[in-house]
Length: 333
View 1 (spheres, rainbow, N blue to C red):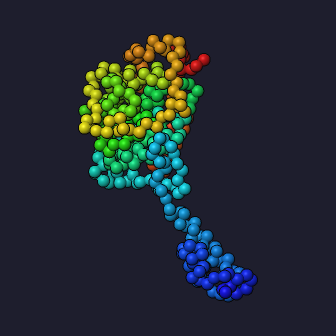
View 2 (view 1 turned 90 degrees about the horizontal axis):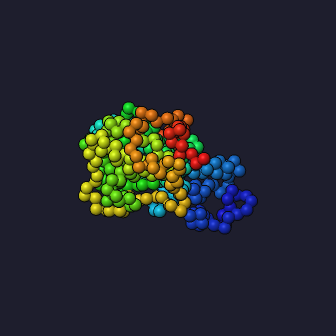
View 3 (view 1 turned 90 degrees about the vertical axis):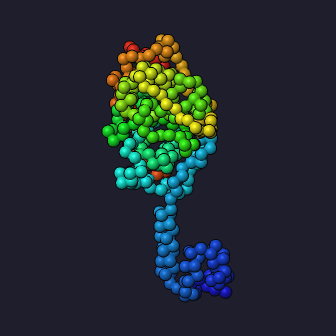
């Protein structure tokens, strides 16, 4: 019978059995190498060495995944995320191309979707070698949600290092690698076309995911700021595209149909604000010929750079302003 340090209680197994009893790992091998007679100090030092080695292993371990892609459920990963990819490679590798996309994500209180969206889109666009910057446009005021105004703000705040934008819903994840997110030089490119979107199939639909060059977005004067609550801003923007003389393009040759995208929205959990207040019901069908980029009213409360499972993004906390004399439906009161 072997003793651990030559005194005190004995362990009923030798070095071979000791390795089998604790799994045969490298920590067990160190224990087996301890001399039969050792001081308390030596035993303490060995335990300290084992603890340090374990911490070092955890520090060097990482995982790039944050969620399981299925029904929008987010599963935590016990390992820390890997560091983000270096953006220096974008400038050094000409295969990434000369253009850079500003991914504009209108957002309010949908953090479960955001945790899945940011790493998914970063990996998706990186595989396609598209330079990009993800902007989360977080509305933090007390007015009703205004998707169009948030996109206008994102356009104005996206900086000069991006030359085209994607108006992108946070609950829509592309799952077909053939989808084109490249620079839409010929005209606006509707990625989530009616033939592919899981819910909306009318031919004038331009919501979900729409790519435009910054020049083309300015030609449309952006989107109307009059749409508070859910819906109709996309339909009005379709008329702006046509009014600016731009041709709308859509994907071709995609054979995955309505399974092309994963839709994370749960209508039972995420209630949409579809109420129509005061004259809003009549006004929602009119073309706003005066408003857009030129008169969006807002203030940036904060700008924060974040990394979600190794995927970089910038969160803009945005305070929109409302002229109640023109759009009294911006609040419920």
